[in-house]
Image 1: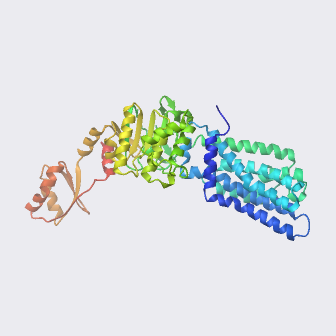
Image 2: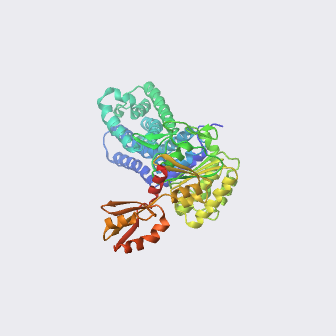
Image 3: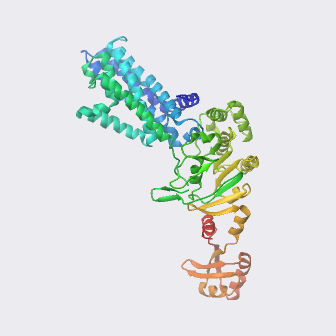
Length: 241
Length: 295
């Protein structure tokens, strides 16, 4: 009976991802975010640093980086060391492989990225504040989309982390602020849009309307997962003859 | 089937038909054996030609794995799992009705029952090979593909694996295994397909292959106090089919290996030449394979 995800793969992926020493890296950006938020709350005077810091640092650095580390490792690590063959040499539909790993990546990113973002905002402005709730919503969206993209990247290239970093730094970091159209293809813009629709802070630098962002977000996520699945179904073992 | 990567043709126009029992795929490293196995397993698409396994195409056909088991060459498995967990997980991915029982049976076949609750990271290389075989057998496939399965196994493990594969073959399964060591393959296989440089060099029962290999003329490199005169003396013997003077010494082609080796010392002494060195010049597996290819 065709399902979207496969329980065996979910469990295997979770254990494999959390078991690596890399798992410690996941917590790092989150810890920094919460620590800085706490310090700034205690020491800062004026009122709008929260949106700037949490929006910029949280959405442009912590969330994307956490997604990158997690998203490229749930499938990428097994492709790199060849152990993916054991999974693929079974009748499991490739879509189930991609979707299951994506689900684990998104869930872990929510735990290590979105929740700390919310906690930091709650420390700064209060747990029920528009900022905290808005940022949580945006962070959930970001976790989902980023991981779809990074899982796809890890099937397309062995240099997924490098390509992902290029995308984050050059595309989202640099160009999005300089070239107006780029925002249409920027995951951080989609998520900031969602966040801003609840939080209403200009300092969040959200440029798209909610409607646009929502549609594009769905398209990008679906396309990324579809491309990843298609590529995985053509997975080839090259190398030693 | 033919498979190329850019300008390099890895497998060139190979046609073969493989049936029940054990077939060995023999050839030096880099010959294309893994490429052939991966083409059959559906992990490579032929650049040209076609390929069917049990009547179905293997490329982009994961359902075929219900009938096919693959033991890949690369060492990596999920090493944080225990042997039992790994084989059971594979059984569940194959949607077997009773995965735990199937896993236990497969693990017993490869004699890893005592170690099954230890993490694979603690296994020796031979044990990791065996657990991979267990995972490939757990769903009782008709076709089993093994890429260099004896790597890292000690003689006892190798013998046991051979018995296992022989039994599976005798039950009517199609077993294809690759190796670059003739001894590993000949004891086990009915038919051997020899692959050299991407081409099918020879195909047949191992005795025929061995005969081909031993009937090739042997080449020796001889160094003496006077190579030219020695060459002239040697060509007079019926055991010698050719001599050539090279900067490295006198290259002698011996038509009859036994007679030549018995006579070389006395032949040399009779003409008053001192023999310094006699070396077989082409004992490498590659030259043997190349000879098979050329013939």
